[in-house]
Every structure is written in structure tokens, then in C-alpha cells.
Length: 413
Image (cartoon, rainbow, N blue to C red):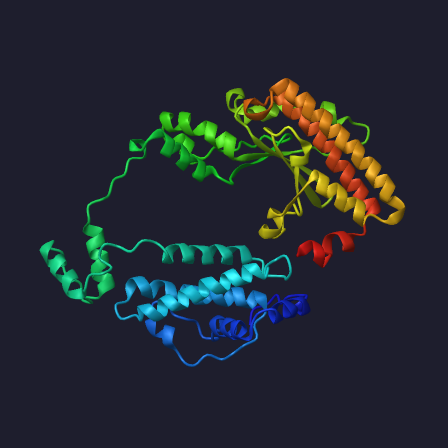
């Protein structure tokens, strides 16, 4: 069995009770794997001895699904006498159960998975992607047809004349297929660029470091692609700026303005005007707090604060965000009664500071679709964000019961 069992098994047990009896039996049957390693290339492993029903914990289920998925991947492509129908049914069951795990939030949020659980998820995603790829032109050919084609091309026949081996020989002898991206219309190319950059970020732009953030390789292929894709990249990706931790006798305003010019080392002023999404990160002790801003928005209500920004946070929990207003309500409701009025008053001061920063930024850089960010404009926002996050952290440490705010089941669900 795998180490690293969940610390809260009762919560998982209640979740499993919500599933039907048949689903639980299928989950256990599908997740089962013996102590002996499964050989991926042996199709007999797909129809091995009877399955033993095991009550699996969630981290074991993900590991077992990963193991089973890898065991059914290669026989589909390399073996000739594989029960294709049974294999497809098993794969569909695998997909359904993985989706069920996601729906039930069986992940880092509720239970402690092994340290490499992210790698397992990527493996499962790759298995799904590879299994759903388009078949080769020779998938429907029989072994006899493949032999005739191999002889016709004057290719030396291998000793083992399996369908997989003959297919590989034909694929190796096929002429290379060419596809020119630049032959597509401009509108289609721009759409492709957007899909390539969607959800990505350039990395952390630490105003106190000298690290260079490499541009995507796509922008370095040719001058034409660079000219077309650069505005899409800077308008789609988000840039995260690391805010400084200043001493009490220092002014964050002057510190940010003095160091702000280092941002120009990462991008030119011409590209700066295409920025639309920025994220500011504030580090306090061992915690990190982010605030995301859409520069085209005119309202601070659109400022987003991730529920969790810590480096070891589960990805699905990191995706859940609160607006600045939602965070204000949450902090006010969960504050200790003797501090609620103080928290509300301090939040109003933060909101007033953020509103003034938005107005000053728009007066300097424009607003809406015509916004053209500049270093001074970003420094204005950075100053306001620094004040907001620093104040919120101090209130949270002073007024909030950590167990209630961070570990309550109503927050995780």
C-alpha cells in the first residue's frame, strides 16, 4: 500500500457514502492492482485473475488509476490480439472514475496526497490525451495488407511480423508531412497564438532581482510571428510582480518607484502598453498573498484574491478566487466580535485607497480597451496593493481565528 494516508478519513468516508453502492464497487474493482508489477506490453494483464474488492483511500485510488491507465496504454498501439472492445470499456470507465474523483474533490484540498501527486495527475492527463489521439492511416489494415505494402516498398521484413512492428516500419518510410503555419489566414493564426498563450504567465518579476524572464519560444521563431504574436502574448498572459517587504521606517511608495525601472529590463515600453493582466505578490513570513488585476477594468470590485497562494497549495484550490469585496465580507464575518468594527473600518480605508489608485492609474494610462500601462502607472497600483495586502495580513493575524478561517469545511467545499 502507498504511504501518506489521509489525515481525515472520516470526511472521505462521508463523501463515499454519497456515491451509490455500484459506484463504490466499480471504484474498488477498477482501482485494484496487485503487489506484482504490471508489464505494460503484455495484453494478458488486461484479463488477469479475478479482482479483489478493496476499500481504497483517495490517494490510493489516484495511484491505482494511474497504474491501471499506464497498463492499458501501450497494448492498444503495439499488440495485434488485444480485446479492443474490452480495452475501450476499461478506458471509458477510467475517465468516468477520474471525473468522479474530481467532482468529489478527492485531492490535496481535503486529503494529504503524496508529494508527487502533481506528476501523477500529469501522467493521467497524458494517458487520456494519447488515448484520444487520431488513429494512424494503418489502424484498420490487416496484417496481410501491411505485409503486402511493406514488400511493395522493398522494406526488409522483420523476424516478428506483428501488426505493431509492420505499422512502425510503414510509418518510418512515409514521406514527412509538411504544414505551414503562415499559410493560414491571419485571423486563424491570431487564434492559435491566443490558445498557445492562454492561462500562461511569464514568471515572477521580482523588482529586487536581476533575473531575466525568457519570452516564449514561439516569439523567437521569425520576425513576422513575433510581430503578430507579441501583442497577443502580452494581452493574454499575466505578469506577476513581487512586492518588497519594507521596514517600518521605509516608505513603500518611494521604494517601489526607485526599483520600478528594473521592470523595463524584462519588457520594452512598446510591449508594456499591451499588458492587460498583472498579479502582485506580497510575502509575509512563510506565507504569500496574491492580488490579480485586470488593467482594462475600471472597478476595484474586479480585483481578485486567490483563496490560497502558498507554494504548496493544491492547484484546484488555487483556482478559486474571491473579489476584494467578497474578502471584505468574509473577513468581517469571521473576525472576533470585539474586532469586527475595526476590521470593517480598516477595509473601508483600503477600498478608498484602491479607488484612488484606480482613478490615478486611469488618468495616466487610460481606461477600458484603450488602456496603455506604463511603469509609473503600475507603481501607483503596486503601492495600493501593497497597502491593501499588508493591512489585510495584519488584521488576519490579529483578529481572525486561523482554524475557523482557513480550515473550515464550509470554505473548502
